Length: 613
Ligand code: G6P
Image (cartoon, rainbow, N blue to C red; front, side, top):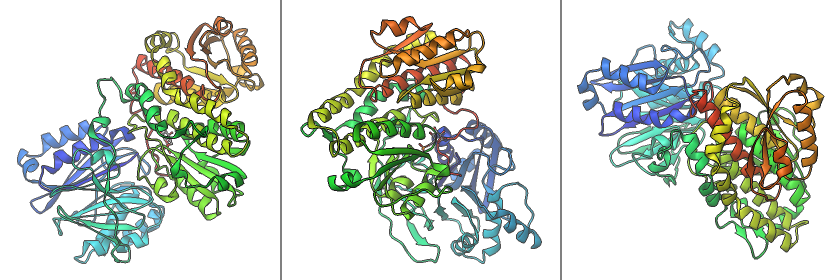
């Protein structure tokens, strides 16, 4: 989704800003732009399409000297919300005077009424965006104090924003503020970098300040002065980023997605390390911040998330019920606060979010807190808004996930949910021996995933038989049902094949009508309870001409014989088996998308972190 970079310091700002935008490309966007301060004037360059287009445009249109002498600027990648991804709608936008430039993430909900008000005062707008309205409002309030003007304007707006504002009348500073959309300030040596995502800061410094909602900061090359919207100073700690620049590179793989799939033995190792207690047959998850007694008193677990994180939650639902005998349910985060969730202090709400910034999940967290539930998060990005607002939870430690299609975050989410369920289970039905056995199973997940990754070349060959279809259906039952849905999501996200995940038993209640000769059915038919029924459902599909690709357990010749093609996963506990099974589907989706020539890491229309509701 939209990305912000701002720079003020000693280096060539256009180059720093464009490199910063490149670091944000993974988030998904459809146009880009940059504004710099050059000899007392704001100069803007914007272009639909990729950052590389913007770079070429700026380098051919601007004199080389401009790159050398400009040390202040702001830049943006835009994921269209209000108006199509054209040059005129791209950020930065200028105020009426052309002397103030702004980039913005989020949505100004009352922009229409503000626009009418400003038009009545003679303002002329060039774009369809809500952002242009906000920068005009700032210009309207500017009486020689940009900071105050931004405060005054922000008091007028409803909605969400992360902004960076630059004025030709007040060089030497950038004003930045946030409400509901992240802003991180990198504190360098004689330079300061503002970004909506730490990835754009890494190359400069590891020392960062996370703004909280309604914080507004005056940033210079040497200082960061943070206040609230009433001009009262606030103190925010400097934190150390825990990722290094190397982790944000492709490491020799053709795509970030392939790299991240291959990283899973390591990322799972990191997610698990030090968190299994073999002595007690339990897990140690200090971030949960709960006593065993509080856990014993819990009445229900509610898992919330969106997209891939939602499907991880669905696996978690099985785990909490199976291992801990506790009622568990999954709720789609966007719906949560609109449906009067019945919650109390004995309900544990777990917000699952790789980025920790998804607007729907964040809104659900706030609702759950308001209702007095026991709320915790399961995030990957350290210091993200959801992680900070929940205050308790467990980090995935999966490392930066750059590819828009989530892979290693899913497997680490499932691993952590299994550890949470184990912890709850030990306070309830699980004996120490049961717990020890299950802890061993979790510990083994990196090796299980490694065995699937070894089949990469074979999976690439199998993919060729499925790459030319326009529809594909994934089926599974029990914990493999969410795996089927996640497999279908991966395939549709990156290959644009219409793919759906169904419960294997549900197929005959409607979807089976879609089958024609050769329709691909991807059946997760590993050796877990219910397998024989799934094999029966496969026969129903075969009888209607479908081509079957099975995910089967190593050594299960009966299941393998039912398939046209198969990929194996090692024998393990049915809940643990979700992890290697999904890795097989990730590789399948990857190779199909590659064969179809798709842009794998940045699929069309998608964003890595969706910060609008
Ligand atoms: C977007 C991404 C998905 C992701 C979902 C939830 O839609 O494209 O890959 O699963 O957001 O993101 P989160 O960061 O909350 O896990």
